[in-house]
Length: 223
Length: 203
Image (tube, rainbow over all chains, first blue to last red; front, top):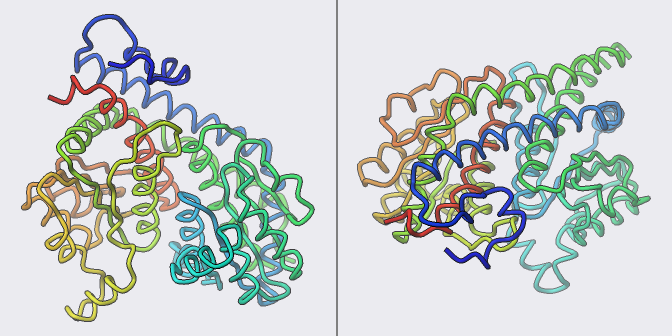
């Protein structure tokens, strides 16, 4: 065991790694079980907080998106890393809704085309990987949906600025304190899972976008 | 407009309520097998094994998500671990469907070609019934890979596949089930590292 390798955070989270003497498997399994249940409580707490802080804004966002879809909008979703998979998750839930009574809505993920991403990244820089396809595909009255845990990814901020320039509806789902996206004038709606721990942020964001999908479907159906 | 704000407030409250209530039941019931799955995965990594993950539709995005968590951990300082999402390459996926005249991506064929003996497979199916996911998990079992299934409410065929670890999320709502699966694979990723940082446990 190398004590020096562990951060203060890890020492707090996994105290058994730092006790004197040998650690046995049973002890570690027991600690891991305790840690699992703690993490479960963390997500429960974060979802409660997210609902409390952003429940009303979530409804405003869903209504605005539904009205934009009703006028013929296509949605473009994007994110980096795990958030790119969340962007694709939102898109597949729009195109192939999991509930039979829901209608499919036009949505495209900007993270699925590796030819475009590597071409733009290589030629003009990674901060432009979403900007460029938005210029090519995006139209006035479309929707840009960006997912970011930090709210500060340069390619996300640049994409929001570009989408606003093209008169699109801009929606961001962020974590921490929302970062630059929360204060950006280019972002119409910013929903935040206020946590500083990425896995839990993404899990609470999933509930946010799942609720958003449901609001949009209901408003379009009844609107 | 027919909808009113109170109706939408109820809808949002109900969705969050399901997403808040769901994890407690699931993790209380599965906490022991989760810890053992972490250990089994850490042992495989220690032996040079890789994660091969797969799923269809929304579950394909979970296969991608879990893969990137291991390859590029968001928690600073954690080591990069080998993981591949088998639903990643549209040329490979559409090619295998065309060659075999299949209506579903053929993950079994990919396992036959790519899998190495120490590998572990993570198969995702929101109801536990996706035929191509089940078929690949069964193939993995025959190849003696570590098999971990992320399944759904009644277990489906996944419950009968004799997997090393089968996590059935007993939620009727597919969104809630998927959210619990996400917390589960995040926790696996977070806690596998605990064993890897403690090599004495991996002998």
